Length: 454
Image: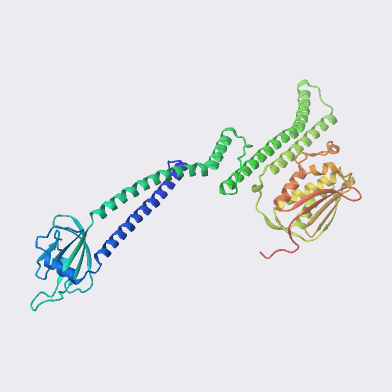
């Protein structure tokens, strides 16, 4: 069975199930007809006869039997074991002798005549109405009916039912094949789609969805899965393309500066100390930019399920640590922090807050930044020129940089990292232009102002 296709197994199972049902129905029908025919035969045997008929039977029976002018036959069994019969004699069975003295309760059995014909036999005990003194106390009358016609009818019925069952099985096989083809057609389409994707890696393949059954749900799930995989691949390709583009600038600058230094060494034409120092400082800055960019790329390359386990942490402490790091870089940060406890990763959330602070300090005159935390809502505000309204929807995209900020240092990944860290913690983030100038970043994280007892 395991080596068969799903369609052949379904066809075989349907055929076997229907065949078993037809065979059981045919067999039950045959037995019901058989029981009914024998019940009617027993009823005809049990019809009461008048005493004169019984006397006539005793008076006209012979030991070797007589010719049978009627459909029925009868044999009289006496207490001494002798018999006489009307028609072919019925073979006496030992159980017939137990009927003596069994008043009014006939016994039925199958038997044969002396010439081998099958009969249905009813044995009844009868007491002679005019028994003389010393005469036998009674006799057992074995009355029979031939059953060969009934057996012929049952054989014909069995043959008819067998033919009907065979036709039913063939019909069941055809129906099973039709059902399997119809039921498994969506599965076939799904199989072809999977094979097509495996051969061509075309994730844009979709399956038509019909109805609301399990196959339709499976098709919808498959389409959703391929769409998610296609989106993930597109994002991955975009990330690689954007990373290559962003890496090209610092690498080109590094190569140019190093070429100048090498040319100076090879030609023997020394570079002025100040110019050489500027070159080395530039090289160091480019290396730092590359290190930051690679770190940001590694941070963004993690899948949604790859983040570290979350723990309960004090968000106000995380913000305080980020503020301390920003102040070391020259930012002028003022804070107003209220306690708030959340579930998240401390390092990811601290890096997100640091990125917001660095971004705000970069655009704010004098690096002045205001930070507040109230009831799980963290705000970071600068006093810079703000962001044009048409650019606000793009601020969290990877490698996106405002045209007005292209000349400033940065890779365009800082806010994308912020969005990823907040999403992993189950929160929300957005940027708006603040009233009076500048930009305010809002982060909302679910939590509580008190530490849980767990």
